[in-house]
Amino acid sequence: RCIAYHTIENRSEQLPSHVANHLNNWVAGCDICQDVCPWNQRFAKPTDVAEFEPYPGNVAPKLKDLANLSDEEWNQQFPASALRRIKPTMWRRNAATALANQGE
Image (cartoon, rainbow, N blue to C red; front, side, top):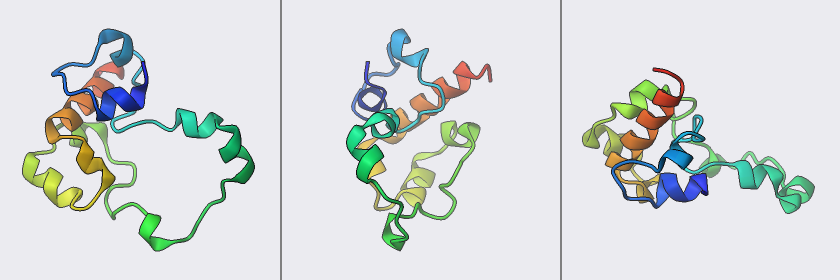
């Protein structure tokens, strides 16, 4: 039932309905565990290290754009990213599922 597992590791064509119905806007992993972790709440601090910043153009993308991202656009947008663990087909599946949950 872990959203991060299903959006990153689940290679099925479709997500199980019990996961898909609770996906919200998550396309790649989720931050729920990070948000509730007592360690993070106590010790985590924001950083201004540039290497930790997202690539330009990857901040708050539109789900519709993500659902229609071609393999070539995927390679250009995420050239050296941990997101490469997710395959482009999975990316589109996740974004399309999130869109469907919003009624789009």
